Every structure is written in structure tokens, then in C-alpha cells.
Image (cartoon, rainbow over all chains, first blue to last red; front, side, top):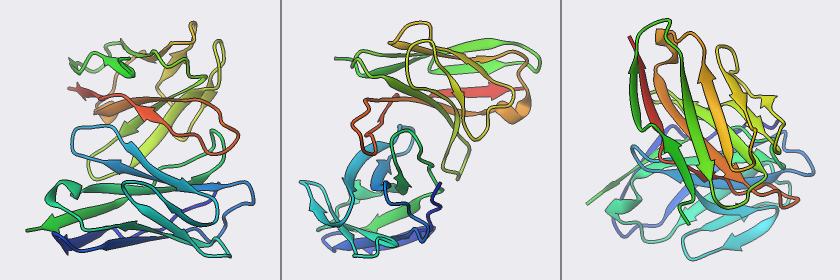
Length: 108
Length: 114
């Protein structure tokens, strides 16, 4: 199973774009990259998933370089409500592992 | 649809007591998972199931047992609770898509073992 490395915590201000990078050097050919968001006292919630290049949805964008050894979650114009823990997962089918995540703190 | 529900929401046990946590999903998902989350930590997989009647061990299975007698339910049992099992327990379910499946999580059960 591919291991992921992401920053423990980040601070940003309202209205800024936030980029969280995840390193996954031993990603396998079949593995997808998935990001989840978790608010206090709640279960994680799926944000976005990709395999290569760029994926965008109404919440975020996911950038994956050609070698797929890293990925970047981009949150445009964050608000206070985006304060949460963000998990980067790499895996395929049922074989995924949640790491410790990145604790994102948005300041007014 | 209720999605994924967990019963109970809170529970306090004494060391050595037993209990069962119930997870139910109404999305007809094949896969179901039990995780635990300790303060400041990510989620660690305890057991999971890829279909009715099947179960498999995750990262931290010791001290827990599971059963998946019905597709919509996944039970997590603690036969003899220990203080180290104080944690928040999350259940999740997913539908195999041939890629990396989106997991849908329940609200969690906060368990304290004294």
C-alpha cells in the first residue's frame, strides 16, 4: 500500500487560495488519489478523486503531475467553514489507508 | 435515504464488559468498513467486508470481531473492553466502481472504557 506524506497543519486567510500537497512516491499503476475532508465530531467526507492530470469539481481542484508521485489539492477562495482536516489517500478498490491528514485553519 | 447510521452515539463501558456497535446503510453498498480515530490521529481500519457473509482484517483488528450477516448491516463487537479501546468509531460503506471507491461515513460512536 502506498504511503502518503502531507503537512501536519496549515494556516490561511479567508478569500485566499489554499494548496495542500501530498507526496506518494510508491504509488502503484492502479492506484487512484482521493481527498477527504473531516470536520470536528463528524465522519470524513469525500472531496475529489483523480488518476492523472487535473480534475475539478464544484468544491476543489486536484492537480497530478505526469509521474504521479505527488498531488495537490487546491481550494479556491477559502472561508472560515473550510477549517477542517484534509486527508490524502492513495489506493485501489478497498485497499486504502488514511494518514494523519493536514489540519487546515482558516483565519478571518 | 438515511445513508450510514451508527448505534449508539455514545457509550461508557467498564473494563472487561462487552458490547456491539451497529452500522446500517441503505445505499445497497457492497463494501463496509469499521475505523477507529484517536485524538489527533487519522482513521485506522479495524475490519472491513466486501460482501454479505465476508469479513477481513484491517490495520488494527486485535480485540475486535465483526459480522456481516445482512448486506445492509455491519456489526463491530468488543468481547472484553480495555481502556486502550477508548476511541471514536466510524463506520463507512462504498460501492465498488473498479477504481478507488468513495466511502460514505456514519456520524461516529464515541466509546469510553473506564
